[in-house]
Length: 186
Image 1 (cartoon, rainbow, N blue to C red):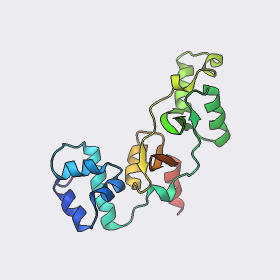
Image 2: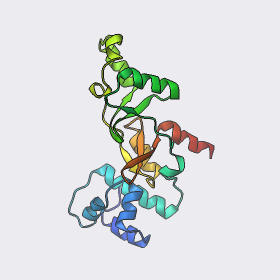
Image 3: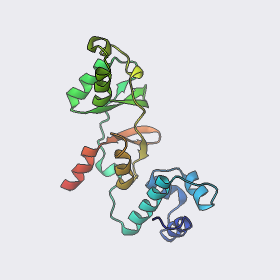
Image 4: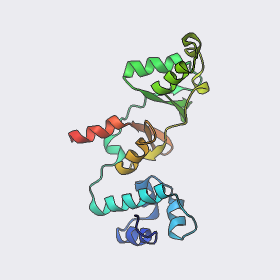
């Protein structure tokens, strides 16, 4: 059970955090923090939980941040490229998923699972290899700031195969479950 919502502002102030800093740590917007603290919104349980997790981590001072474990080289594929380009990149780099971009902006994702499901659904391999990725891609990976706590990222990785790490609107890295495992070696 979560503590009372009223504790967010109390604990944040006790730690000397601004709403913006807490928002960055929790991977949410500053306006959401303000709305929660003023009781102007009924935020989703998962959002409130990540805020409390960020507060707890700040209080104990033990948590890793995205910037400490991210993979800085983001291999992506353009939405208009054929599916065969995504397969080549995944095989070349040993990845099972890639962000799909329109220019430099992430607009979707593609994975081995997505492609396999197309084959299992009866698509001919010769046809599938030439289809533009935009026609088969999944939703974009979620994006977090570089100061996002690992607790937030691990929660996202339970739902998504990867998380993009952004700074000033541009992807500066990517995190997968494999990156979380690397923390065991530290």
